[in-house]
Length: 105
Ligand SMILES: [Zn+2]
Image (cartoon, rainbow, N blue to C red; front, top):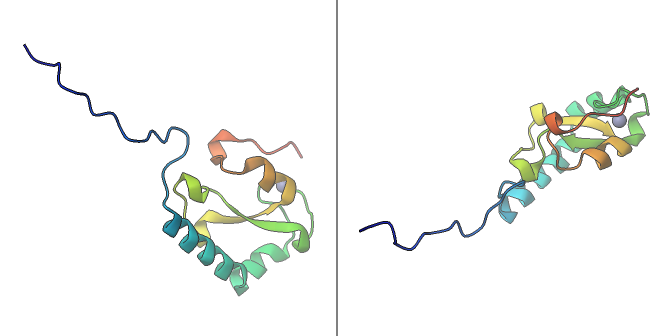
């Protein structure tokens, strides 16, 4: 007979969130801060348009949003950062773009 050995359950089931360690989060947040001060970002923000809802809210009202959130395994790269208005950023939070539809314009 066999199969009655102790099952090793995963120590922690991440489920919805992928596991990202604190060091990585800190590093990626620091990178995002750096990019926020870069000419690249200033240019992107200057249009004043939210990436998600398409509203023109003005550069000052735009925040930096991770398309794939850091807690979902996203990184602070130019390809993963978009300008978003506060309501969209708050709404989207850690969701993936496929899990969230921006409000109708
Ligand atoms: Zn928006």
